[in-house]
Image (cartoon, rainbow over all chains, first blue to last red; front, side, top):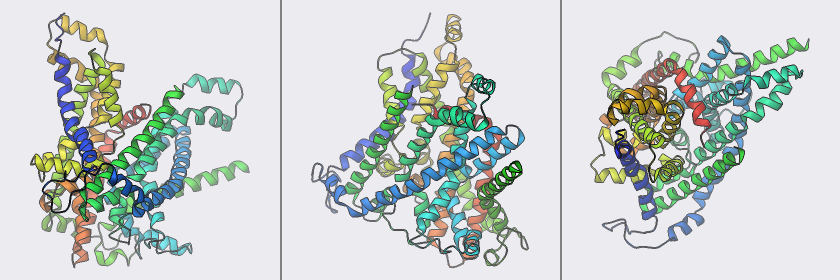
Length: 286
Length: 277
């Protein structure tokens, strides 16, 4: 047989060249920059080696911690809300296959097709006096200035739940679809109620998917950028509102490239740690 | 009695959630037919003297059509290049045995978790060196690298391509390239389409990378351009508004059309994506 012995290399090269260039090199570059503290006038950013001192500065940086605190609070609010909503919707749509199920799936998935920047702009208009959401809040006697600094987190909550619930619902639906039908038949023969089927068959089967979704959500939260960045034009969102917004601010406006690299590298590390915990969980399951 | 009660509660919940998901999109459709002066003073969810002014203005007097074309070219190229490269790498990882294979798989799975937003700045610095700033390729190339894609393809190739079909073709004297083109690619087609959609959508939605890399208004991608209108804030809110609603409506309509036409692939992809790990 004429198996070209080295042809596998030919197939690997295109992908891994781009991979090296646009993932490995930037990550290494970020780490490298974080070890220096170049004065503004220096010709190269790699002058004045200071070891891990930038990281000490990150640890002492109140704005950075405030960003993480905001996001922690935000995650505690929206992760349970989004999980409950997507579980309920997935169970509902799964029990109604056929036309209603298909239509419902499309409806919940539609917001995912809206770029987050555009979605945030749309919601921004609806939050303004005279907009739908504003008028609804007034109607229910709730505080209507949802773009005020003390409520901006809830404005983001409304937008982000809207964007992501459908996407996660479709993942859960795929999980429900993969449950082998003999399991249902056995439950039926045993006379299980539909609540029991949900509680003892469907929910346990979904656990793996729920961990996966939660992992992505937690990683995604510290990286939130588009929504707060756009909202900051309509409201007074602080530049350290999310950790990723802070990286942008330090890079773009303060032009402290060495320091922003250290902050960015911390974000990468946190993502990897969350991912490792998640993957460990998967391994122990299977 | 309790059945009726259940029914009413279910209907109510479905109605509220349905409204939550659909009203913003409906609002966009309605608002894109209103002048700015009417947006906040008329019923926000119903038409009022509908006009096409916003669309006409956005197409004739703004750079919005350019942004749309830029977005289409960049997302389409990133999707096609990304899916092709991932298919090649995934096939290679799944169907050849070679030293270092496991190492590459581990490298890819670690890279899955590296957030692209955290490396936007170094990517920009690198692109300055490579003269990629303010070019299409400056967005296309970083967007085309999908660690998830390579991973996804290798799993898909492992599960779907029978080894004996590959061997039979080789016995018949087919070159490795021919085997890939006429056997592997057809088997990988569903995964290819899924990945194309994901990379296309991710590029279309990306904001941070273009913000760093594209610095001339004529080169902006659509979301970036629409946001810049807001940030620069002209003194004529009417015209600013016109560009934003018309551009948003077109962007959303295009993406929804894409999703609907390729829905079954998306679902399969999400399902497989979720069980990785």
